[in-house]
Image (cartoon, rainbow, N blue to C red; front, side, top):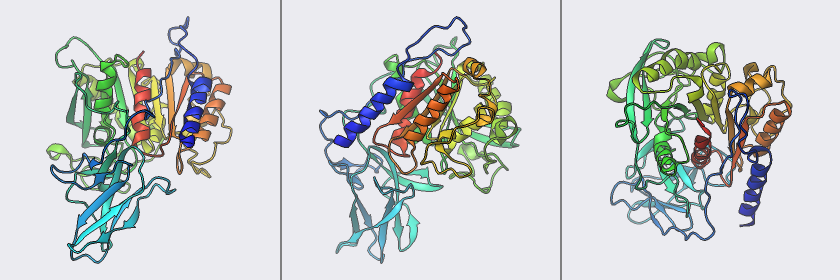
Length: 448
């Protein structure tokens, strides 16, 4: 409890200091970014009752395991009477590694193997089984993309927190579309969220958020794990965000069909048999690199022609988590004539990646002429072009770097970059609860 209070106090101090305190001031120059109040995501209430033990919501109907215990531990069962050794692979809280570790299960007289984990942090978690050394899926529950392959999953509730839960509010639609990208000479597979009323209010045009996944994932994760549509539906019902279209695509670019080196999990063929480009072309380069060129030349024009968008930079945003945050920085910073809002969730320069970078230490003082492809060389001009530069991390190790992020923003402010926002997710690490909260905080800043 003391640790939670310390984290909450740190977040409040950060909010009251360099990132939140400045409430809107209308600029005489309408092109200059107007600073807004940033509202942190809801956290577990000390008065909220614990959620009783229950089957994971991702289990098939009638299946009892994995079972989420009242103290946030998880009990797994796996039926393998002829196996010699069965383990469950998962990232457990405080293990100090992002890579799932195998935990031994115990076999009973009926051939059912059992393991109960340590308490897990709230939100979405991947896992899979290891049977006599082979990684296999648990057949009793749904599978999702993660870690470069299909995984199973469980969800730990956060008592009193419901911003990503389905509610009786107007709901938007999630569409699955295919379009042909000349840049990659291949069909592309995308998920598109349209807000409530899009199909009935046909005279209205909408701003667009382009949302990127992390490494080992693809375009489906922001719906399946991130619950983007649910979060935005709930925020819209509370009048906390502007209605917007959200486009989710993989940033893998390469040859059609097969699996290229570095291809994200799930690369291959999308819905309807559409071949998907594979192979990451790295970050940065002319036009924002291979994916930046594809976005500017193919994706954005297709979205603007197929959907009722407000097709200008002031109504266009891009954000991403982890690797997707790095991709977002690479694309947007060299295309500031196309984007006015940038969201880096556990990604970007503050991660400390690159030569000598570990993601665990505060970045060294930077050169405005070189950081972010030189986009900040003229701070006044950057402030006019970018209405919000949002950066977030979880508060916990091993990869999250809140102190580095705070230092990074201090350097930006000292250099004259005044439109940055920092959010630290208390008690979470490099995981989906961090990024759900980040979206909740970022979305209300958009298109104001």
